[in-house]
Image (cartoon, rainbow, N blue to C red; front, side, top):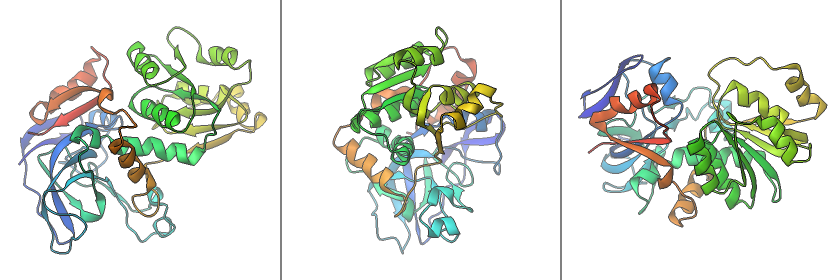
Length: 346
């Protein structure tokens, strides 16, 4: 088969690779679409920590073309999405149903070969039927479930004023889930005018360009110096990680969803906000609950089937698998804004 194979840091090539072999409990998926996650860029371009050669890509959908003799939950020809986390099902966290916190998990697209390929082997427990959902939207169910995992965990209330720090794909999905949950006072913050325009179209009531205005000052004015009820940090930036503490009201809540890529040294004012305002800080990792893979995945699929959430408009670029190098060159060059990038094997 053909695949986008990573041989070293920033060395991803379209090349021949061994076809996956189906085991008794697994299936082979012909990949139809695979999204490039925001976490893929730094890992592939700067700091890959898994075995090489590797096939990245953990946000993918496709069609089952083979299944093992013990597989009963899906059939050849089924349209499916792949759940990337493979839990050990033995550690204390797994036994408690906290699969996102598994001590010994494997991840498709990292520890195991992933979706930047024509075919991929997946445990049958890690596939869910998608019916007639288009493959590109289905490839975004994973980040959709990540966003929902954070919202279900922080429990916003109708009428809350919410700040979303970072209006990339994850932030845009958080905003859409908030609206579905009856939260309309949404303040979107980013440094990209294009992303803020998209946030506005998705229902953000106020958009703040952090290149032009200080978000902390602006949110203070908007909330009569009280701060927002909840802040979702979706950028993974040291700046927004600190600002999230400053813009949240007393007794408010901060949800950290963005992945950190460097250490953070908090200012005195930001750190004191945690205890002086008695903030609740919660971090959310991955997208899973019990029974595996959890309500985050099944609710996402249900809302997609009922056209209640917009995913296709979040896709800014599509590349054939053979052009995978160009997808990462686009990110490196920064010559144009991008949102969700999709890799499409033929």
